[in-house]
Length: 389
Figure 1: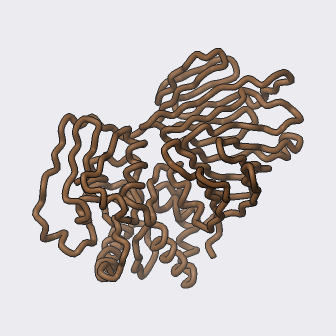
Figure 2 (figure 1 turned 90 degrees about the horizontal axis):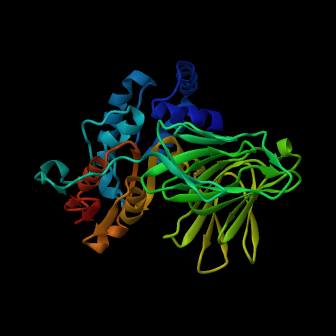
Figure 3 (figure 1 turned 45 degrees about the vertical axis):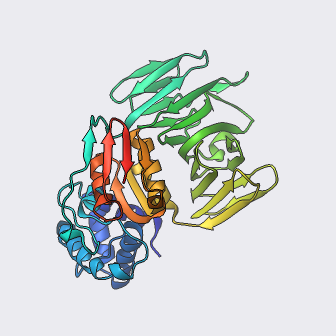
């Protein structure tokens, strides 16, 4: 069993963010044979890469990846789930290198190179941007490198911060934060709760919380990760996240809610702590690494055990796809790159992949990786529309 602290260091190592002391601690930990196997298994499960390492050495990671890819290729015929496994995809996360591509498909190296059709390609990588709607109905555009400050709120272009000393004894006053397609943003609420908002998301929240009452916000739609300020710091006041079909109640914890307008299910994933999920007919509790699923068409609350950390890697600039269909992947891409995706062959929508990609990748790099798996024949980019063939 890998501790949360060690897992965090491993992820920072793989995303090239670990400090020298953290690398030293990880190196000492991996020296134990059992820990080395845990490390290898973790990489294999979470990053679709099978390590064959004789020793741990951050400087030799590139060679370990290449050796791992070679070993993975031998097993590809027995794998029923096709994988997006490439050096450029792994390196975008592991080393930040976007160069040579290695893929594991039977005829990749023998297949003639076809140049995709690209017309008026103006697709950019997503960035920090949002629209803040104030209590008087006016809108403020928040953008990267743009400073905004007014009364009890300030933004540096990446995060919106409300004064944590703010309290109200009268009626609550609400603001809205809307993240468009191609955007992301963070907000620190007046109680100290931090929220990461994904593309195409809208959050309603009070500019200050009233004492003696539950702290409530509403995720109108989209996806958000919450790191809630403990109730012990707010005289026992609970924290609630409302949504159209559910209510999440917490005391102090980390969790993720995905409730997009164009999806028929709401996914609530608990990373740390404890939460309750309730709707009109039932109430259930989540433990860490559990996910609640509510379908709009019925009232059941289904609970699954999952890898919660994998579900929230988007907050760290990483796309993690484990057994996701091409349609699901393209839905995520359409939000982040603000594009429309059309499948010329609808059968391709159900093909499944495993892969890890950086949110800093250009859309053409990702499409090229998918194309080289031999699942799609080609793709076309015209203006802001992508056609998968």
